[in-house]
Amino acid sequence: MFKKFQPSIDVSGQTSLKSSVQRSIRSNILSHWKIDVETLEQIWPKKEPLTLVKCREHISIYSLHGEPLFFQHFDGPFFPTLRLLHKYPFLLPTVRIDRGAIRFLLAGAHMMCPGMTSAGGYLPPPESALPAGSPVAIHAEGKEHAVGIGLTKLGTEEIKKVNKGVGVETVTYIGDDFWAVQSI
Amino acid sequence: MASAEPGPSQPVAPIQILYCGVCTFPVEYCEFGSHITRCKEWLQKEHPPLYDKYYSEEALQAKLGTLSLEAQTKLEEDTAKKEAKAEKKADAALKKKMASQVTIKRIERNKRKYVTAIHGLEAFDVDLKKAAKFFAQKFATGASVTKNAQGFDEIVVQGDVSGDVVEMIEDGVGLLKGVPKDNIVEVEEKKKKGGAEGA
Ligand SMILES: [Zn+2]
Image 1 (spheres, rainbow over the protein chains, first blue to last red):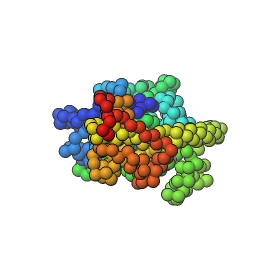
Image 2: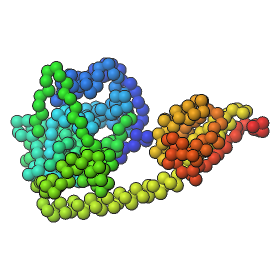
Image 3: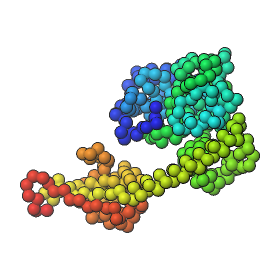
């Protein structure tokens, strides 16, 4: 999503959000991420207004005092920025790719099923399976921190069964153009 | 990987993670970047224990994980190639940077009223907002960052300070250090209507 992204070109405008909109974002995040009210309050205090940074191709970035915190594509699910996820790794459910897949991900490739079903990979067990269209933290074999954020293209059980083609679409990753945007 | 459930009333403290001072990646991912040699030097100097953690003999053995030896060799080759390429690119970028111009334009607003527009400083990693503030302070006047007609940011200082700005760049004052004086181009923009003779 952010393979080519330049704030000076791709941002079309910034607006302060109405409090009703902020409330709905807050409740959306609370219901979809693994986060409690207090921690969200710490990340984004209620009194402080979120800024919506509208970008090309219907990407919305939400920033607080210039620091990007969340983003969204069309009216899809909310994603934390990768730096926010690094601070709070429990926000999203996890998949893991094997070491061999890391360099492909860092080149912007979507993640193939075998990279997650192999010995170095990880997918949630059946009882906590994820449906298609779930935001996930992409971890990597032997690494402590997430290497990227993705959106499941297939359900995680389906990924195991099909085991070929793209399983998780890469949304953002360490070193992409969005990573470079530390303030907006 | 299952996270500890956050407590009912205490916010969970954020994890402090160390990002590389060279490539900005979390340090454990430097090996996948394009500057590994410089990354390693940086880490060794700034955080020696972490350097040992990631680059000691045992660490190198352990991180192979499920990757086959050939795949690891391939990865290292790729990294070396990537690094060489990045270096080349950096060289080219530097050359381009050294060739990019800084224009200092004296614009006549009214008879004897001027503004000075300075364009191109950002190519030399000068923070335009900070520079504008700096000029405003230095000349006790107004200065701002605005988009010019071409859509590029430039600093506009009230008053004719073009000569002083040139001097400041030549002397490498404050945050103007690093802007090569040979790249300065001075331009004069006269008021379009009528003769601007009284100037
Ligand atoms: Zn590095």
